[in-house]
Image (cartoon, rainbow, N blue to C red):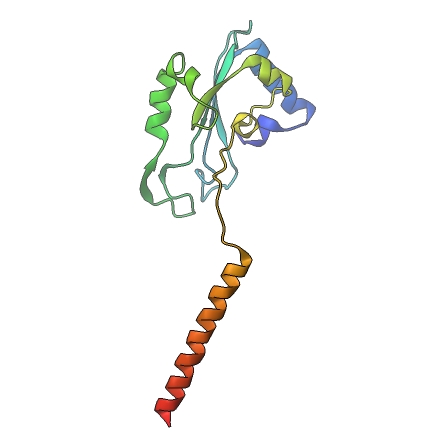
Length: 167
């Protein structure tokens, strides 16, 4: 289904998500990479995995963030080596064991039903995924300016030498 259904704020979107979580057993949400349906559409999509129970049963929901499906994400869709789909199948089989231990910074993790309910049944993986930021040390602006000035000096010297050779 289109990604918008996972987090849309309309009454219909919220009710559909509530029904999946409360009245059925929502097992998983697989967020697909944007572009997997190109050239036909560029709409981001997700796969919802659920069991029809008509009596509930959702305790936690398993999420997987697919970033590669074995093809480029442009209109040509040429084969590439990166492919998360085999890992999706493997981790799906482990979701009752190892997946519960995964950090929310990983490609897959589980979220308890209570947390999903607290977020108005939002099923967007970005709502629950934690992003790790890598600290990057930058040189000071004065150091960069000094390096530019040095390079400009070397260029000026090189140009002067070149002019001298051409005389």
